[in-house]
Length: 624
Image (cartoon, rainbow, N blue to C red; front, side, top):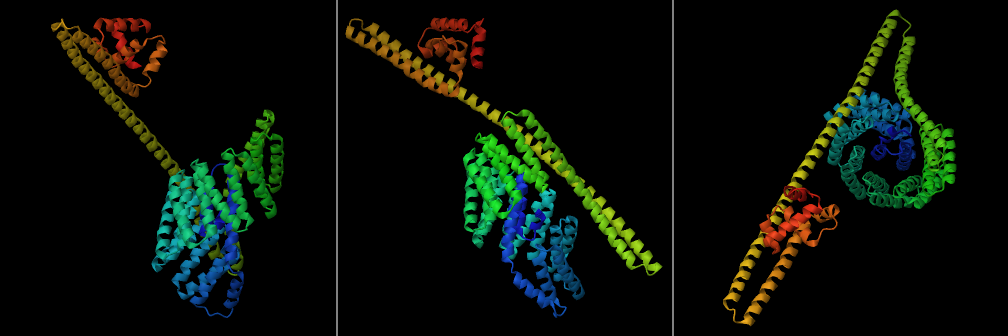
C-alpha cells in the first residue's frame, strides 16, 4: 500500500510521515511503514460497518434529489475512499453533481474535499491539490472549521511528501488550531504527531518530542490504546534519533506491551522488529536475534514476504555480530532469493549490501567487492526507475487527456461544426495541460532550489554562531585565568606582608634578647619562639599558597618535571613563585630565605632547564 493511502485517516498519515524521515536502512524503514499502515487500516476497517453501508446504498434507491441524498452519497463515498477508489469517485461525483444542481455549497465543498482525498490515494497528487484548493474557498465561506481543519491537514500532507517542510508545518499548525476549536481531538492529535514527524526529518528530535508527547496526552484522554501504542513507538524512534537508546527501548517496549494485548500479530510483528533494531544498536545481539526470529515467525503467519525478507536480513547482521558468519550468510542468501522472487529492487539492493558486509567480515574481500558492485548497480537502477516513473506519469496523464479528446471526437463526428469545436477543445486542453506540466516542473525545480538555498543559509548561520560561541568561551576562560592569577598574586603578596610582619616581630624578639643578655632562660625561650614562628610560617603559608596554585595551574608541576625530572622540592617551589613574576626580594621574604640563596636556586634552575640567560627564565616558566 502506498503512503498516500493513509490520508483519509490522520492516524495513518502522520505515522507514514514519521517513518519516512528515518533515513537509515531505507528499504527496511519503508517496509516498517507498510506494516504500520496495514495495521491501522485493518483497525479502521473493523471500525467501519460494511453492513450499514450496504443498507445506506439500498436507501439511495427511491430517495428524492435533495440535500439528504447529497449527504448520504458523501458518507458512502468517504467509506469507500480507503477501500475502492473508483467506487468512491462514482459516489462523490454524483454528490457533486446533485449538490451543484441544488446550489448546496456545503455539499459541493465536501465533495471536492473528498475527491481530492481519493486522488491522493490514487497517487495523483496534482489532481488532489486541485480539488482540495477548490474546496478551500467554499469551506471558508461556509465557516466549516471542522472540514477546514481536515483540509489543512490534507494539504500539509501533500507539502510534507514533496519535501516542503516549512509550508507543511504551517498547514499542520492551522489544522491543530482549527481542530482544537471544533473539538476534533483525533484530528488534533494526528496533526501534532505529523508535526513531530517533520521535526524528526529535520533532525530536531527535541522539538519532535514536544509535539509527540502532546499528541500522546490526547490519545490517552480519548481512550485509544492502539493510537497510544503507535505514538509511543514514534516517541521511541525520536529517542533513537537522539541516540538515547535506553529511552528508545523503554517506549518501544511500552508500545509492544499494548499491542500484544490486542492479539493482532501484525502490529506486534512490527514492534518486535523495532525492538530487534534497537537491540542491535545497543550491541545486545543475542536479544536482537531472538526478536528477529519472532518477527520472522509472525511474518510467516501473515504470509508477509516483504516483512520476512527484511527481518531475515537484519537477523543475518545480528548473527554475524555474534560470530556466526556462515549461518548469517545462509540467511542473507535466503532473503536475496525471496527479494528476487518479489522483484523488489530495494530489498535486492539491501540483500547485496548485507552480503558484501558479511563477506568482508569473513575476510572474503573479492566476494565482498562483487556483492558491493551488484549493490551499486541495483541502486543505480532504482534511481533510474524513479526518474522513469516520473516521466511515465506525465506521459500517462497526457495520453489519458488525448484519449478523452479522441473519444469526444468520435462522439461529435456527426457534423463539421461539432468536429471543429472538438478539435479546438482538444487543442486548448492539450495546450493548457502542457502549460500546467511546464509550470509544475518549473515550480518543483524552484522549490528544490529554494530549499537548498535555505538549508545553505541556515548552515552558514549555525557555523557563525558556533564560531562566535567558541570565541566568547575563549575570552571568558582567559578572563577567569587572569582573575585567578591576580588572586594568586594577591595571596603571595599577603604571605609576603605576613612574613615581613613576622620578620619584624622576630627582629624585635632578637633585640629584646640582646637587651637582657644576662637571663639565659629568657634568651632560650625567645630563640625557641623565633624558630617556631619561622617553621610554622614557612609551612602553613606555603601549604595554603601551593593549594591555590595547583587549582589554577594544575599542569604546571607536571610539565616542569617533564622538562627536568631531577628538580628538588625547593627548586620547584621557587619555579612556582617565579611563574608569578615575583622579584627575588619578594620570593626571599615569602620563603624566609636570603636573596643570595634565591639567586643561587635560580641559577641551578636555569642550568637544569638549559636556559642560557636570566632574562629567559621567567618567560619560560610563565609559558608552562
